[in-house]
Amino acid sequence: MELVYGVCLKYLKEPEDAKDAVINIYEELIIKVKKHEIDNFKGWLYQLAKNHCLMKLRSQKRQPVNVDISVVQLAENVHLNGELEKEENFKQLQYCLGQLGQEQKQIVELFYLKEKCYKEIATLTGLEINNVKSYLQNGRRNLKICMEKKQQN
Image 1 (cartoon, one colour):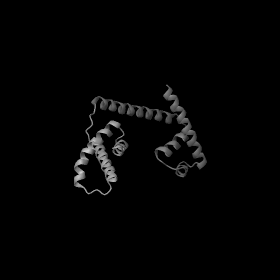
Image 2: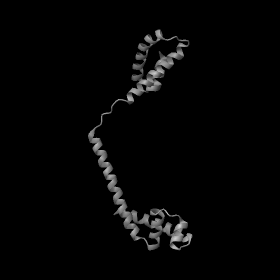
Image 3: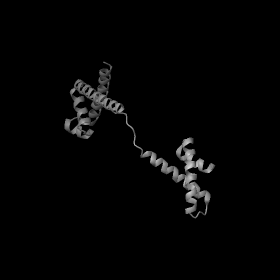
Image 4: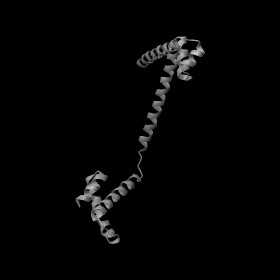
């Protein structure tokens, strides 16, 4: 009985569930022992207990879940709040992009919005690659500073 209880506790995790499973397994055992030719009883019993517990876990997963509609509505509000926050961040980003110098703004837009590489940006703007990197780095820093200021206000 300890073997069966140990197996059930291993799979079901709850002592009360494991005790209930042991009782069910022994009820099942009375019927199955008559039907099967058993060479190694201990191994067979272990497998029977394991299969019983796995079936119980599977059946629990299929149980319908009661959903509280107020929680679903709350989740919709949270999602909506997240969208509003994204929109506000986007507006702040647009404002801060407008605050950058012409070169920084152009380089940041080409790199992030148009997904151009340094070499392509250098070709498009006629700047050296080192200047492109510098404008991009300074533009990012200035955007970050501007966004932080806007969030504090």
